[in-house]
Length: 126
Image 1 (cartoon, rainbow, N blue to C red):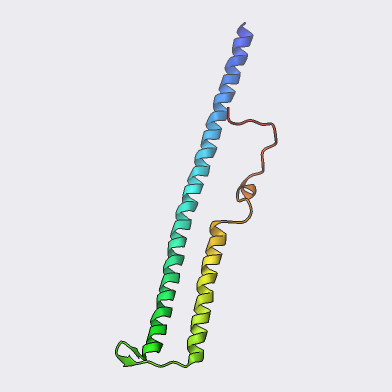
Image 2 (image 1 turned 120 degrees about the vertical axis):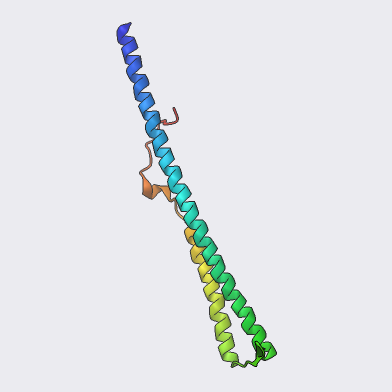
């Protein structure tokens, strides 16, 4: 009986230690996720601000060329310059968003690089 109780006590201690380790691991994963979320939010805001500013510059340039004035001064650009500016700025804005979105939503699983996959049949939810 005493051997059985000793074995149960050791098993209970091992289970408790496993739960503490699991809790520490999950807490660390959550902290890493939260830090990554903040970083992505900051980068996303910066990309959006840059793209928005760029598009406002496109609209201002287009209106200035169409009206022929900018802040009360005469404004004229060759059509090839306007076309080049609008084309490259559009490509840049689209490229910025694509790069950001591919980083924000990666194609492959992110977790596979962090730790190896656990073998089948192990249950760590106890």
